Image 1 (cartoon, rainbow, N blue to C red):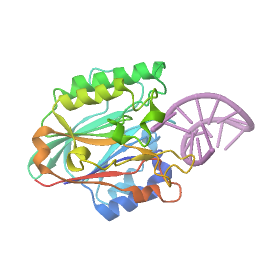
Image 2 (cartoon, rainbow, N blue to C red):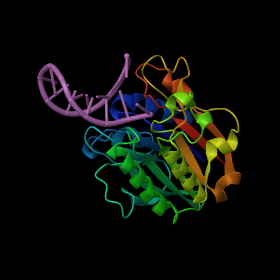
Image 3 (cartoon, rainbow, N blue to C red):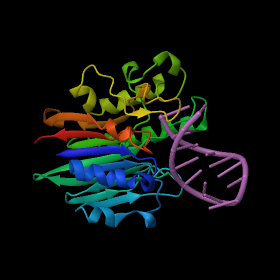
Amino acid sequence: MKIISWNVNSLKIRHDQLIDIINKYSPDVISLQETKTQDDNFPTQSFLDLGYESIFTGQKTFNGVAIITKLPYQNVLLNIPNFHDEQKRFISTEVDFNKQKILIMNGYFPNGQSLDSDKFIYKQSWINALLAFIKTKNTNSLLMGDFNIAPNDVDCHDPDKWTGTVLTSDIERNLFKEIEECNFTDSYRHLNKIEPGFTWWDYRMAAFRRNLGLRIDHILASNNLINFLKDFTILSDYRKLERPSDHAPIMLTLSF
DNA sequence: ATGGTTGGGGACCAA
């Protein structure tokens, strides 16, 4: 079973790159963040032509998440349950794979802007709402997306420079640990004990060429799936293209 | 400093 997650930073701009990824890797499931696409404009037919169905929840200008899959699916959620949110940042569904049901949860975590911002309060509220939900959904589950959290210093190109900013703060890292304590494992770190594994590089100051990145995109697996985790690949070639997203797609392979 | 959206210029958001 092959899973891809990607913050596309506009599905409209990245559409052809995504089609290329699907043709190249034939993933079973693709989770997208920052589609910036209203539901009426979602390119459903592009993916149907390749044998994939789409579920999505979008809005004008910002946010927007989607799951594209060639597997049978049911029980779609377009919000974190019991959390009122104007911003379209969460979608989940159960897919059928080899007679198993796997819950796919796709989140675009808030950025938070700065530690003293109202947006940082919102980020914490959002994650706390997610925590309440995943505590009830912690077997046969995959939680993925743009977490906007670099869990440890090794996940940041220059921890000292980032001290006191969002994405690397102790508050966020403790929330990430709380997620793991809900019975989830960071699949990248499980399979790669040492390498930094950056997934995002700033568009500015030639950050990609200089490898000034962060690891903020993740796929967490419920602990009962640990023995099935086989490979995690960061598709950083897509960060080298003309008009790239600032995030690389990430790909997890499980074998059941 | 860069890129996307929106709207038709500049502001806002991103990390």
